[in-house]
Length: 400
Image 1 (cartoon, rainbow, N blue to C red):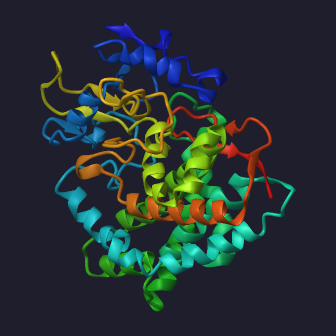
Image 2 (image 1 turned 90 degrees about the horizontal axis):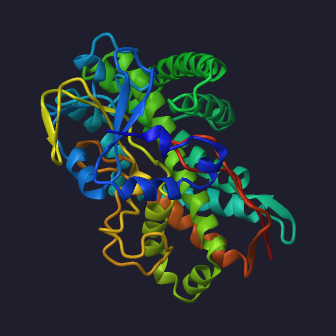
């Protein structure tokens, strides 16, 4: 058993660049043990970094590895995301996912595409030539927040309010970076957002529309979902509906500016944009680790048999740079072919909003590049202090 604390030092140095640590993890054939006292009933977590093991685990049936930790370990401490489709096993998982999946289908999102383009153009046009701009706060964050809030049925005037609550909730999901202050703020924001959606649901019940919140309210009225699930679903979809996309857009522009030869190549060959987005997802995956799973029964992964009740996690950021799968994995190459990254996961828990995230990133980066002949990085960016989500809190650029 290799103690991960000797390799994965969650420090500012790691936050800025976790990949040397990931390389050390990938050089071993063994999973890594991360001691923790974060959840009652568990003394640590097995973290897997190799791509082949990650794929195997992500596709395992819930009778082997469960997302409902409290089902296997009733004494475990509940988390904010318990009861959502993320932390639910079949058959409840399929029931919940089906209620939301139609809104995120490619056919339905075609109706949202004009709004994505409109918001993108409005935000990018506000970037003044030859003036310093923080791309995250000016474009990468407000674009996906505006889109998912619109889809949920949140009025424009409330977007900044729900955004603040969502950010506080997300800050508390990283078990390696939890202070009591962060935990308290997470709980308060979760309570505030729960009350907000309770009021919004009441409004949608009286005046139905085409929003996700309204459709879920109708599902509640038809007894397809209980009220607690309805509230949790609204909060969950709001959070995941913007965070990954913000990371993808911000990380994407940073990669292109950090590797100007690749930006130059993209300008010459706009058809490479979709390929570039896949390479961004692989190279700087917005989610670096999966949420935890727990072995439900005796389970063999690789050459090791794990007893029931063992916490399991996957380091996506490492798996997406596995040299056994990706040639020259630490190089950013928008012409990379056969890019089978797992940035959006696999199996039944694969990211529901992956098409939306790709669509927003494609529209945003395309319009930005076409709007300015030159885009320059003014200073080293600031990464958010979390080991789970890898995205930028600031990206200062100048355009002309």
